[in-house]
Length: 489
Image (cartoon, rainbow, N blue to C red):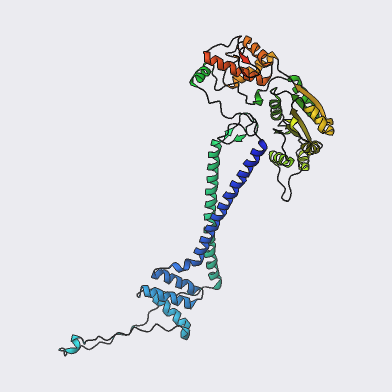
């Protein structure tokens, strides 16, 4: 099963950018909220005095700043709350002396209302003579307890500046705390998301937790879990963790075709042109391309493309994303951006294009232009008719192919090696429970085609589980119909 990597990658990038944009909007909104709150506090903070001492302190500050009228108003408010506030009265008298005639008049005294009926003392005559009032001794006026002195203008400006700096330091502190909380939240969220991600064992690509196949290489992510109790019991006999013979593409288990692989690697190292790999269905073309891409990734910019797209611009977008190119602000990616990347990094771009028999003339023309750039080479793979089709559709592109290799089938030894690698990858040891005779019989039934080998082996172990066999002997695969993939009746 192959996934359309171009579409999945584009969708994933769009979702990530959309999510990041949402979080940025939230951060900006929260920051603006805190800034507005602190600005309101900085402008409205003087209006929160509620006690007589608060009004008195405000009056002192205004007196220092030269605002005598404002100071008198605050002192009046303080005396309303506490008529016996000594320091407020003394400061009020001092300010009135300084202002002289410009001082505001004191509030009019309260007029006592006469009672409607005379008091008993007014009706009855006095029985005793009134004592003579002693004249109080005149005391020398004492100095007020508080004699504020008007500070210089520089001190007043400094005090105002310190107040503003303190407010803005509070704003910066809160925003810094918000940023730390945001970073902590992001790290925790990323950690939890990574725990949910599935890392492909073949290409180390991060995939969503619910994905069944890798979006990059197409390998199965989850082990084959749809097994019965009998299957689990039979697998446990040989230490298998899963079915070794599924049709999953596992490039690290690539086997055979040593001569063809050696010729391909020589031409790639010479960088002299393109390579075409042909073969029937199931011979291992896709596995070979992915194995080469992984093997050569340290020396080249290797990119595997599952199949041609209808729009070549989508392919360029995918190539740019795979190579981590920065997108131009005022234009789309072009073919020549790839050439500049190859020249700056001093690493050739090696594209592995699968399903080459599906190429169309519209796709071939820009592809030929891409292949003509310095530092860009192709390794194409397709069915046997791919060579004739390319020659018919585009003779100039066919002339740029310097090597054609054909994959036919594996040998008996390579078949045994492939089966052993699959078994060991699933947790088993060696070829158990297969015998050398069973391997030869499976090779005859599958004709050495890798996909058919997997299908025959899968049918064989299914039959062995059904009959609870501990050893698979020379009769393995005899009842399998190679054409229909079923047991013969």
